[in-house]
Length: 109
Image: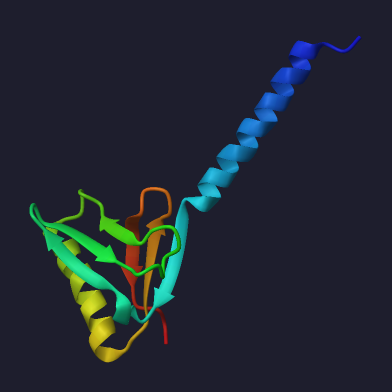
């Protein structure tokens, strides 16, 4: 005889595992771009925000995590400005749920 409780538990477990795997896979996105259309803004409290004009999908605004040091923020600002001034590609990894930047840099040429 089929035990409905075991079937329900097995089905619910499969759905939870599937959804958790999807969330992990979707959490990090990378964009590689010459950031000409990006606008950097510095707000009170050393908060740096990047307005991307839609080049990052759902995240029109990317934030630097509050735990980043002043040196991290300065390196990010410098990387984006160097990309703009020199027409160079930069890459940015970000969490596509929170829209927080995870890492950034220049790709290999």
